[in-house]
Image 1 (cartoon, rainbow, N blue to C red):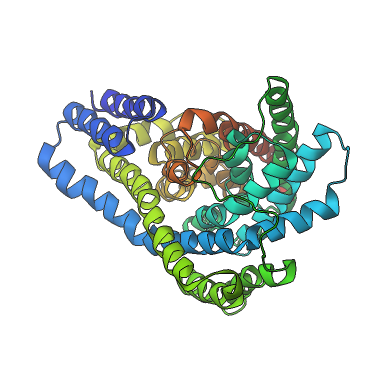
Image 2: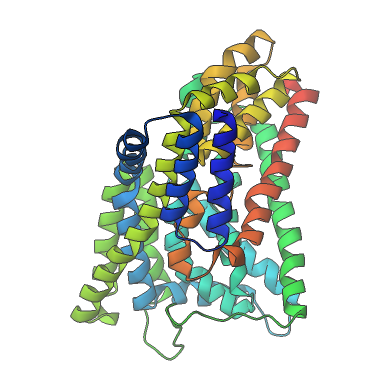
Length: 437
């Protein structure tokens, strides 16, 4: 009954969130279903377990998202984001090019910038917040319908950048922590898997965008989105990228904490862009950015609270035991168990930290190389972690002022379909050529 309750709880959360119910109500009702079927104490499960999960998320993400949002507002209101986008688009996008070429250039720009920031060590969710105003300008120039914006931003933050050999992101670090491996193990399968993901993303998304245009869909800003005034004064391209480069350098070279890096980057942005912002604007955008970060943080926190109720139940341990006892190829066991754990916990790093200590000893006894376990697990971790109830997705809805059912199809393609193809590539190469690890 407990296992059934856990599954029903997830289905309740997925259904209600997709029907535009508040994530707080959805996770509360989902937790109630789990508590009812598992026989846990109702009040204790809500006020202790659920709230404890919320507190963990707030502790981890509150200041990162707050200063990430403030930086995003600074770039939006000063015009720096539009300056970056316009300069790059003017260099690559010529007149009378085909829609497909527009799509490829627009997506390529967002993927490259996003990948550089992510591989520089900036947290993936923060990168999307920072990139949002730039992506808006790129989408406008390429006339790509806005419903694809989080799918493309997610492609540059939630896919190969988390799993590529050498990535400093928590998904790769979680495997290192659990297995005692290094960041760059199994480089050839990892790079091949990343390449497959990029190809799948560009191919399918191009088809989807062109199909949407054929139906008469075009780019349209939400009234609350920043508006691009082409005649307004704005910092030039070089000045505009300085705070981003500064953030990249102080985080990677000087190894400062990401929160300190974001604070310093915000201050530097205010100094460099002060000519384009009045004092009242500075106060307003700082306050607005801080305020907008709260629902983003709480959306993630609500999902973490629900996941805590699940993972603290006896039924969850029963599911873990059942999954780890499946009689399959060791590589497939690694893929399956990690993917399902990440789906259940709603996070690519959390799922690995739960699954790997349980399955790694068994896989090693079956003769599977620890480097293969690492690379397969990090790729598998990104396949099912982005279900509709995923906090990393729900936190972005207030920022883009769109509904989940509008943005999720493209996110499913980039963060589930493409990552599954990449994982299959890694698993196949490791199975056929284990020496590559």
